[in-house]
Length: 302
Image (cartoon, rainbow, N blue to C red; front, side, top):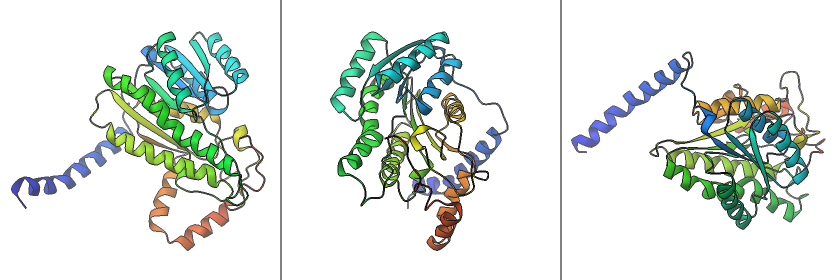
């Protein structure tokens, strides 16, 4: 081993300790926040659910323009009108992110009519809510195309310009189910795991790109119509998150350039437990929390 390589090996633990201390100290100090007044924010699935709350939250925080994408024009129009009444310029476009050609076409329309997107929020998602053997093949494919591949197309459409401008942020509304899957939602869990890997890889790939960052948000069960009917065993101990809270924390994470956010913070413990506990112990935790049966009463939308 040459001296340069030896120096790198010896320096590594010092760097790790330094960044741990730095991260710990930053928890108690006010952090520098991104000014959103010059940002054009595009939100997929922006017509309802968390996407609609995200639009309102970005508007409250002073975003310059908002663009909503989705498949249902009625919802998009209503959300757009609501944002406009808040005093923020808002536009909507009907776009199915699963359709690659449609994404690229609408991205060009957005640039021409509204301007360069500087914050892309990949929020669009669907869930079939059945076991593998009970699932329709087309429904399984649809989930993967919207929840996972859709992010490839939207990010490819808008990231190059962000890199040129040295100004941009890619956001992914993921789920804790990407790290802790449950029965009865195999399509959703698989797609979110793929999405999480996509964002981890993208985040690392953009480390040396000035002005461009990534944020991945992994919330626990959120109280929206998408997962209507899902029941955990102890709702007072594990209450569903409010979509407006998820939206607030997401915008905060964008403004502070936080790479990964687990909601609530106790989900960090779940990640640690999965790394150290044997599978049989994890199974008992799932049984205790009701994870194995929580989708039995599912009747949400797809």
